Amino acid sequence: MLTRRFLLKAMAAAAAMTALPRPALALGKSSSPMTETRLMMGTFVTIKIAGTSPMQAADAFGEAFTRMAELENTLTRFDSASPLGHLNASGVLHDAPAALLKVTSASARMHDLTAGAFDPTVLPMLELMEKNAGAALTSQDMAEAAELVGMNHVSMEGRSIRLTRSGMKMSLDGIAKGYIADEGARALRAAGVKNFLINAGGDIVAQGDKAGSPWRVAVENPDKYKGNTEYLATRTLTNEAMATSGIYENILDAQGTRHHLLNPATGRCTTLPGASVVAPSAMEADALATALCVLSSPVELVESLPQTACLISLPQGRTRRSSRWG
Image 1: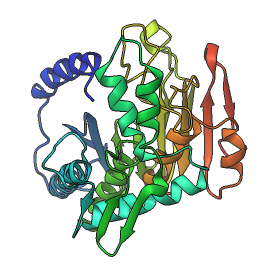
Image 2: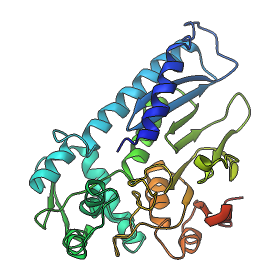
Image 3: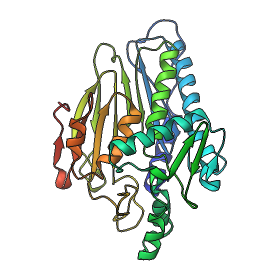
Image 4: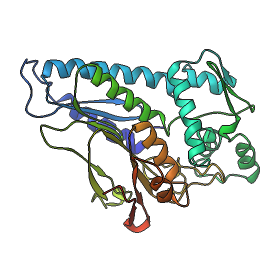
């Protein structure tokens, strides 16, 4: 959902972007990364490419953004004409596209891995909060929405997906952006690009380096809108991905007490400010970052997973890091 805060930032950034000159198409390799940013998936997606010619980079930008836009149209819950929109409306989708099958299957795996903390079927609860922003929710309303939650009630057979309880809906917001970033990276590699960084609104994929230096990324402060803009941490990424989830970007009421990160077991909004995860793929990192905000022992789960690290944002600016965070 696009918040007023995001729309204001988008308008300002779009105006600035129109003034930026595009690089001339030359044959020689550029000594500094080339950058292109587009507005998609309800956020800004930026691709940086290093170590190649502007002409090759321009072609690669086009291939990657085209692929990501195609996947956004497939996996969005905000368009009733999308495959996911059809599934949510009718409860069943035959001949589902490969991307939706893959992300739904990955969601089921992440649901099992996180003992249910990651669950895309919380959408009825989320929509209830969105429609009643600022208003009290009755226990009956919450109980009825809770009956529709449970990834174990999503059935997959062949190319068909079925929501087995009437009224169930799925939101893939907590995993699809990571998958789309991974696919953008795949398109860049297919175009011959070896050094790049994709930042899809905090879902990041990095490969190679930046003109001999490692790609560096930062974790934003959950209190940045309260004036605390100092980064919680910075980190290098090499042939890996990072994703961050937090309660501060998608507020659903004027008091700031309701947001998009829900505990599927209770229907309550999590109080953990945020989590950042480094993993082999952005899809894994995206889903884990969402789940860690719900789990009571998030670092312990990450310690059990190979090639995975996390930084947990705690209240009052405190943090906790897993051993592989560095």
